[in-house]
Length: 467
Image (cartoon, rainbow, N blue to C red; front, top):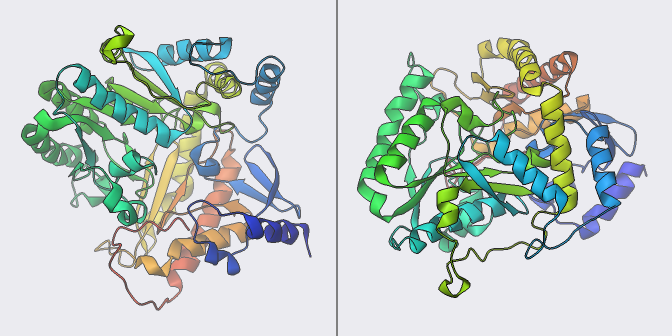
């Protein structure tokens, strides 16, 4: 038995893996990873896999990054953790100062959580609590976009709309208002991204006009709806939304957990609309993919609504045990150093252009409806019928075939349903991008030429099989 097989067998006896139907592993082998270096992961039998999805969208500067490693080691010699209630430490102060400096103007206060979903919960609670402290207790609902995803804790699921993750738990979820997404994949032929995004904003305007007195905040994934299939839209929507939230007296929450830190072509997606949200939620790439951490940035106005004598009970009494963990802060500081010193955003423009050119031919594929891209995120939408954009039945799991082929070829491509996407670390080379494009093209050919017979079940029409 190979080392891979030994570790797989030990794993399956004791582990329950995330986002996984465990029965799949009767026929789909687990890949035990021994080490990582740069964009490559290596299993226990010595086979390497190019990490095209940044290990769930977190790793921006490669595995085993020397700069991040060194900063964590140095921190480990001094302080591994201390509670942040009543105490503070050097790395959390420095990180907070730097986040305030690099984010849009007006976001002057930083609150930490342990992961992206927890960060969303913080922003939702903070917004509701702000209005409560301001004497507007009726403002307790949230507006969100269809096809959105904000995490898998209960409140985070409530403001999401990917049925795979939410349908089972409907009885537990908050009552939210869902507005049609500006998703530009759905635009009529001949209509530009900007035109479509403007037209779709009418739905948001109507929802705010009707419900603003009971709405605390609107929450969006700016520019890219990640788990919803890497669907994309134009920055004009964000500008219109900021203006409308101001007019109607509603907070704007930007979930930049997946799209922050250069993924969309600017450091933060909100920069492309030249706006400042009331809450900016960051995680994933914040620590370079090393350690779990989330940061929620907000305004002095929001902060002031909680600042009072203790007896008023206006304080934000929310906490996580590892809030502001020094090791995670150290990783984040090293990550920000690399962005500052290596001209990353500018260098990524050439890599993004290479991703575009390497995959451009797939736009002509008979079963590809669209190849779309925003910055360092590129998605390829496989369809049954190109002209009508008819999706494959989700039960056919076409994306799984691409995933399996890619593993055979030495690449980690993990499609979302029938959407094949690239979100690679920023240290990828042009030649490695070409390799990924080749593997994806082969996988799409295999996945779309096979005939698959399934019993169609329409309970989950927007299902996103994670492959």
